[in-house]
Image (cartoon, rainbow over the protein chains, first blue to last red):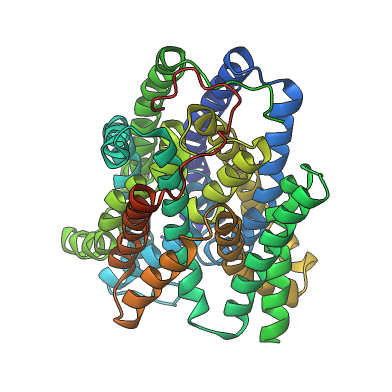
Length: 235
Length: 243
């Protein structure tokens, strides 16, 4: 049985579209709810909402293009349908997927991308990649209601401290990911530092020149600038 | 943009927003979980292929070793930033640090709202939802047009995107939040770097960095008044308890 032919079959596209449809419905529903509440209970206008959406669109562009480039590995070695099934909705990070694919192939004694990769290896990849990440959506289903309580316990119900928590949590998360690349030096370090300085510059510039619209572009410009600096330094 | 805005009444927020969000979030998260099992079920039903149990256990052990700690750490660490709807969406669609959080952060920055407030949660929801819809479109194009995409861009551009965009995203978001809390930024970096010198895995280092910085923030807030507001996000905050 040619595993590549099976992996490219319409059945896997059907599976992909089912999970993508659920994920898109969820996002569209939350988006609609949030816009409705903001417009009806917080005096937001369509113009205000469009500004927010535009900022998100500009920021999302770079990471999505990057994801497409990295997912080429999945498309080529497994199949386009598999790449879409895993990347559309599910877990998403291509780096995680590649790790799981490698784990699955190793577990059955085959080599991902190698001559010995068989239909059994493909079956393992489907199972391990999907089941290993099922804790995220299941956890969201059963524990999201509890997260507010945990956060309130940490903050003691103090709204201004909630802002501090958010800033500290974001700095902690991105401090970790930035530090991981900083200590490697070279182009990676340059792209982190470049992105950081450019983001700070563009956000400040928006305030200095009284041009709030620049903030919609700030992160997008900073990430492209940081990327180019990193690549130029690496040569 | 936010000068005439008001925060949302806590009852309206709970009844008209949070309740439906939890209801839809619960069922869609369950739906996505079930949908993740479909490829394996379809392969078994239509092609009668199912891997040996011993290999499954071995593969899942390898997979879960990496992912289980993050099932707990990520929602708790990120919740303060994006709220309930953001958690449902991020946990079902992934790409949190490289895509969801930056979009939520920019959306909040553009709107000029404070994280952790009810309005802040709603704005983050818009940012994340937009990133998911665009992400699905982008990934679909990527899946069906790989050959064209590969030929269209030079190797230099592909390498720049594959290797250097992600670090730049992390640096840029860190820079953005350094502007909002520059006193905490060195602490976050130091707490991230020290465990790395001891080769601590990510599931140890991330909680140290996140919760260590939050604890530092608490100490600074209580003892030195760091982060206590002089002016609030919104002009009027009628009953700003918690979101």
